[in-house]
Amino acid sequence: MGFVDMHSHILPGLDDGSKNMEQSLAMLRIAEEEGIRVIIATPHNMPGKGCPTREKLEEKLKELREAAEKEDISIEIFLGTEYYYREEVSQIFDREEAVTMADSDCVLMEFNPLEEKSYIYNAVREAYSSGYTPIIAHVERYEQLMKKPEYVKNLKDMGAFVQVNASSVIGDNGFHTKRDVKKLLKAGYVDFVSTDAHSDRNRAPRMAKCAAYLNKKYGEAYANKLLYKNAEKYLL
Ligand SMILES: [Fe+2]
Image (cartoon, rainbow, N blue to C red; front, top):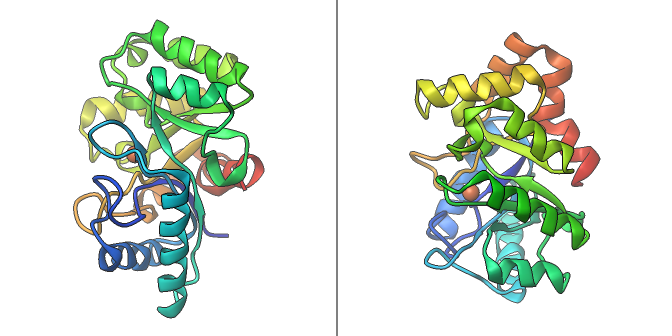
């Protein structure tokens, strides 16, 4: 048991997530209290927020793992990246040089919240044809996709996985977002629920309240898939 948080900006000093090692450790302590057992660190690859090299990512991962061990924190941490999709990323995928999720074949992708759905569909097809399985990060953010649950179904039919943020499930991002996410959960279109944590404060790695909610509303079997089983099956 224990949750797998597969979307987290916990690596220090790379993007708009954790500012330094102290904050990363504070985030890990919260995660542990929340019942999280595994974290996939997914720093942004996005102009303006950060585009760290693989070497830099691996160096930061090593530093965080060592610091966590010293503090007796037993959470396992793996590497990923959240790619803001653009021409440059399409080329990275073409060259098969993507930093995938914990060395699986899956890549985490995000878009402009106002992006046209045809652009998102094309990006999914491109990632897929490069040999990757795309995961759409916080799908609830994309206005065009939220117009109909079928639009998300289309993504799944193209071979993509779908992630939503734990905060959106429990209504922390507003009533409309909660309602949109509910439709997707009811239809069974969600594969992963993760924190997308950015700090130990406002956007902390909170999972427990969401997990209790999912168990109550959707039953243990589906909740477990969303909270760790799918991650174990497809990413770890
Ligand atoms: Fe993120």
